[in-house]
Amino acid sequence: MTDLSRPIYITTPLYYVNDELHIGHATTTLYADTLARFWRACGRPTLFLTGSDEHGQKIHKAATAAGTTPRGFADNIVSKFFELWEALDVQFDIFLRTTDPFHEAAVQKVFERLRDNGLLYKSSYRALYCVDCETNYTEKDLVDNKCPVHKTTPTVIEEENYFLKLSAFTEKLQQRIADQPDCILPEARRNEVLGKLKEGLNDTSVTRVQFDWGVPLPWEKQHVIWVWTDALVNYISALGWPDGKSLPTDQFEGRSRGQHSTPEGITPFEYWWPESVHLVGKDILWHHSVIWWSELLGADIAPPKQVFAHGWWTIEGEKMSKTLGNVIRPGDVAAQYSRDALRYHVLREGPQRGDSDWRGAAFVTRYNADLANGLGNLVNRSLSMLAKYRDGAVPAETPFAEPRFEALRQGLITRVNALGQRLIARVSAFDLDGALEAVFELVREANQFVNETAPFKLAKDPARGQDLDSSLHALLEVVHALTYAVKAFLPDAAGKIALQLGIDTSTPLPEALKWGRLRPGHKIGTPAPLFVRLETA
Image 1 (tube, rainbow, N blue to C red):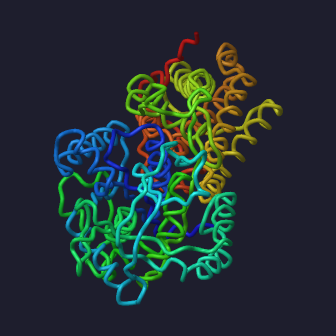
Image 2: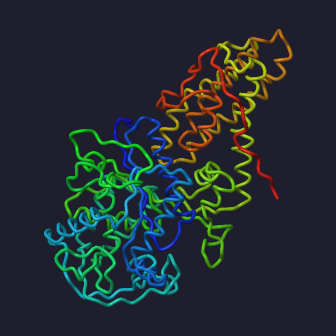
């Protein structure tokens, strides 16, 4: 069982500032935001980081093409990141930029430790390098002589660089995974990493000299630290590593959309880092496991607790690309359908464990079935019937006189009382789709309860007043529970339901998900539709 007193530090990758963000970036971020919202709702100490990766050859190249400086180019794109996260109401606690001076200082400190521990050496470097990935490849890694991710021909780079003795960490990483199998999730991704580790690790170049946009090596400043071994340090530099007393980004305005605190008497790094969870796409798992863990171990720092690598989206069966003109812009989807509609589709249909296909027809079908006809219909008709038949006042709990109906009511009671622990179990396993399925099982059962008990018919018979009260009370208890249950997944809808129900949602989970929390006589607000049904072609 998850210990809700234990902190959790949730991170996304830092997104490259070479272009605006698409649905892939938003998917990782919405997964992280949902996890952070859920654990906060449980009263668990939670810290959520995202940010921007602004160094490297790719950014230098993009800025040159745009006729501006790398910093000016980055500033423009980062402003669009902030606009998108505000539009989607992503409530991060930390937004880190790799151009932040405190981060650059931490990167240099890590490299000084690697040098002092004898893990860096200078050598000639010749490699196949994909600028878009900022990654070295061997010939056997290529697909038809092209980068396996971007399908472009790698550049042959030759220069004298510093190398990290990655080969020294093969057995250490294998042992760590054996001792803590859940350090890489899901299992299929863990097996991919283990398979590559069996081949042994080769030392890797970790500096560049052909451009100067990056963090300089402190003792040889013509060398710029490789963008990956620079950017990965953000996860600890954001905590003030090695001994900062506060979060460095707290000094900057606009770098947090959430609320966070670190207990007195302990540094943020000491408090948050042991419970760190990285959420990444599958294409950068290698960097976030093998490269990052080796860099940390080489600097005498413990690796993160877990890395969860999700899959990719295809679009209507095709690879997403500018060339095909099928890039999904998350801000556009949210503006057209609502933020919750976007969140729900990502959480239910997204690539949590394997690749997923974004299809417009499936978006509409899922929205109408679950949000409009499911949750929205249940909430609206429950509150509307209470307003119509009992003047908006919640009746006292009473059993049905009809045994068959009472059995249905008891079923709802059982499901509501079990929901809190079911949600915690599913979210702990990074199964956000499974968590929502538990919620919508209750929605479907409650809608069937309305159809079976038919309060609109009971209201026509004065002799059935007890059964009408029983039906309405049960439905309002379900709506109360759902307000809390969807709070992390559908935050806008939860806020609207809470307003209509006339409650606040400050009680932590799972305590809030208990039957009997509505007092007799509680007056609701004005019912209003939650989700407008979408027209199908």
